[in-house]
Length: 245
Image (cartoon, rainbow, N blue to C red):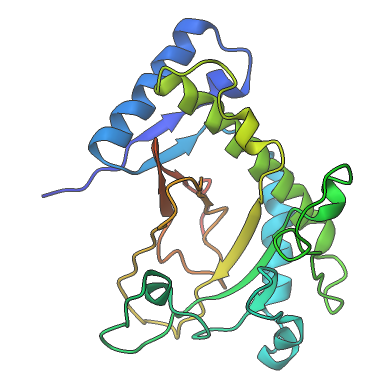
């Protein structure tokens, strides 16, 4: 049986779409969440130059020697910085030991919102930890922050659409996202050429919105999967723009 993940254009929510256009999008979101559980989001208006800068920054960082990247590791309690390949196992977060005892193949780098983003609030310095920026790649910070800002915008646009899809009052989710712990995990599937694996990504936290962006399929990153996470309204994905390599 073929598994089809629908592509949903959220442009009416990004721009000044009228009420009928937004209702049509909300119906598509609802249908996809009820029947498939996954969806591809297009029409999000993330600027091409932001995507280009972001992907270039990732290539620069993940192209460093492993021992250099390991200098940007943080304690497990701090969801920031670098995670080397095979240093994590998603199944363990669910209390399940991998049948093969194999850890995750990807390496990753995390950034997120910090206490400085909400100076008027008393927030946990661990949950809203300061970001660790790679000094070996001084051009990394600016484009990654620019892309993170776009990703946050898209996520909040989606919560607006979710409220409509669920027939909730306008702005229903605003009170839950006014100082949300936004984290952007940048994954690099660093596998030997020709390696074929099956991967599955999920979230055990129903209150979490996970928006997985695949900005492009480049010479370093390999798109083992594009979609992850489940919320009350489904799972969000973003396909990469058309490119040839």
